[in-house]
Length: 540
Image (cartoon, rainbow, N blue to C red; front, side):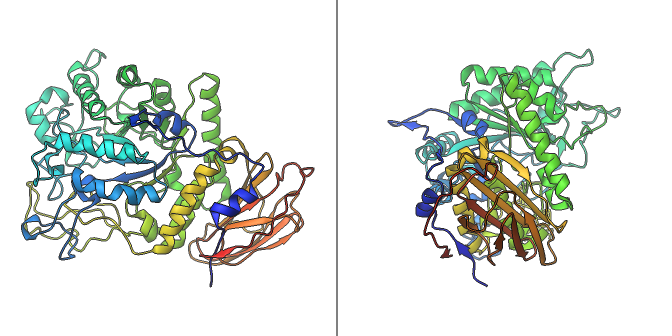
């Protein structure tokens, strides 16, 4: 079955010639970087790739998935990471989210390299990320990496861990909540980290903890970082975040704060721990949040999808009226989620690409997603040959991005998915005005497994139809008001061409398949003059 594509460089401009397309503005001006991440994010133009520098450009010579430097393998570091920047830029990535770059704990650890989120020092960078072949410090290497990102018009977000390692507890016990036994509290089931004490018994802020977070902000801003992703932001109080965010933004108003927080989360990470809902975090100064799109895989009705997008839109409008706009990321597949390839195969991964590229959200992916990595590691949960912590097991979460060991470079082997990834990301930036100023509405279909929505703006519309059933092929009729079969419909993504009738689109979709079309008129207004074109789809 052949898959069709439009030549975006020509056909999109023909199709939408009467609609202004606004690409992301370059923040580099005459060699000087001007952070614009907050503005980019609030326009829903950030296309974010989450990366683990420890594996980002690792070299696994014997292909056993684990990096063994004593056998000639090369771990990922800030120096060799630079070599991948042209590659990811060519895919349309304009922002990288660096998973934690701080030193990791080695006592009561998980994995042979230590979890990235088991922070042991707020004021230093992880020595594991240093290139041992030069005389530069890891801080100098990180600063150069960020400069090289900026030269490629790539913004940099760094992760701010929410809890500390047992090593940090031994060094600074005043930072932690202690149980009746005097030992630090373990949050949820994260056995390698301990809960920070955000407030004192009298309700005042724990100044010792706040001071450490403030030092972290100083460090990363000095390196040239453009923003923060706050891990489990719900575990800190509004007062804590408001004070820290105000401090960071006083030095750089464009410094982004993204909260790992969802409207579906309602419980603290441990008994007695603070819990600040997503909305309150936005009030405290965060620019964005996660939403609940990671539940998309489980939504079996279009109404659930529509409800989440309506909630996002209501929050956006509410804060716009207050003069403090907010935006969300497409958290469909974060490093905490199972690989979409395992959930629904490559078609489902492809669906997530196009859904994020046709919605008013910031696109978010984990390195390896773009080529269909299922995150299966040959060494998974086996006895370790060598360890750098007190754990001698290659611990991993099956089907999830490895953050516990010196693992291989992420990546699958799907060139089709990679091509879609690059095309869709660039389309998202080009179609900025439609996606962010248009009217989004869901359409009636004759099959509950077929979801469909349309965005109308000025003289164009974007139509998306997807088969949410990941096991069975489905046919359906989608009711599209004011659509005439003589209207020019430019296919951006489909396998079998749909049958277009007046006011209807008849589709036959394989499991997890998505169709995306540009329509050269605003279907909300049937009086718009039709635009004619002699475009024909090109084979992929």
